[in-house]
Image (tube, rainbow, N blue to C red; front, side, top):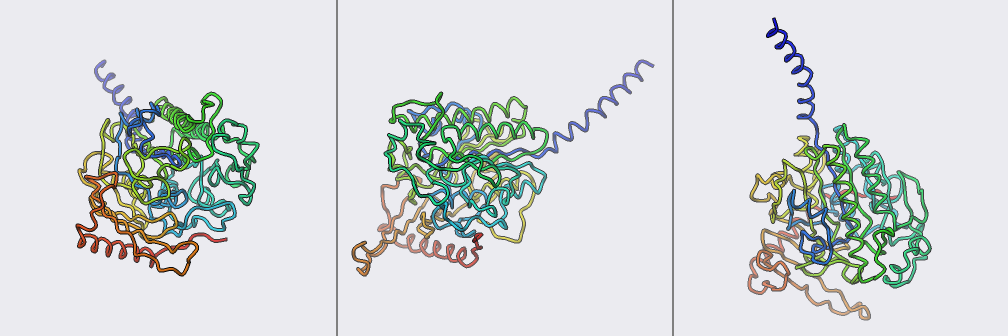
Length: 470
């Protein structure tokens, strides 16, 4: 009798416990993408920085995987962000011609299919907290592009509402010394959903406030799948931090900002761990383009790479990337295979076992096997380089990189004969710093790569979709 009772009790417990097991096993994974602004390849401890201390992101790398050959699709803000969210080269979605300003009359077309759209259709709660820069008109804001909620600056933090006029002409060091200039000299707006809620926004607080909202959102949605897109406004100039993160020496301005971002990343990661969400959450940390080198101690470092923001050299478009997912992404590992932000949408679709719609072409590829370490090679053999103005300028093919840099007539002689393009060919497997031009030694390779570059660009141009226009 006792034995029968024990068996019945065990069966009842198993019946009660089984749905929970199945629920956990069937649960969709959460995703957090943290996107810094103008952070260089060499600006993290885990990517070689000796000056900037980033213990939280370094821990992510120790527990996850560094991607050392990770590319953005443009060396400037707007097109880079369009590419990340849509899985497309910016030209394919009409967002390739430099950045948007407060007077701009276009934006990301809400008919495009973003990461947020894709996950929201699967029942995810979706949020964007930070810099949007894909259009400030109501028709182009995050809620029209798959996000349930939004808080952030709609464009770069060096832009003024409503027409970008009245910006301070003050050296960066002086702005840093006078942290109150965030509200006394700038007129940059903070939006919540579709309304301006603070003008000017206190830029000293935005990194922390974005994080506050991200933490609140994760806690509120811990029992259902969520996607948090956290595109920080910093370290784009002007640089500001809260008082407790401030060093008055302007030589340390950039370091202060990155270390403050790292501390706020730590808060997000602590929240995920404390809520026991680590085993079912992917976190990706990367940057929208390379460092703004002309601002010196207010800009970052490209490490071993050539040049920075605004260029098609590696320093402009190869960015630091750390991906974290305990039990799924192997800890303490490195991947040097070619991957880009345009690959995130199809990769997330693969991870969630949710096929992308067939009604539109994208340029991204599923690289989920590189996250898990089950693939040794990337499916991506080619990558296009577009200038900050959206002109085709280069092609990566395997280890080879070709750049065709067109010359312009002198400013004071617009009718002068334009010199032929400068042709550059680099073997990135041996020359990550792009110092040795091999174009003259390999004319056949140059010709074939140039032809392929033009072919790929022609297809994108012919099939480009229109942005939203006012």
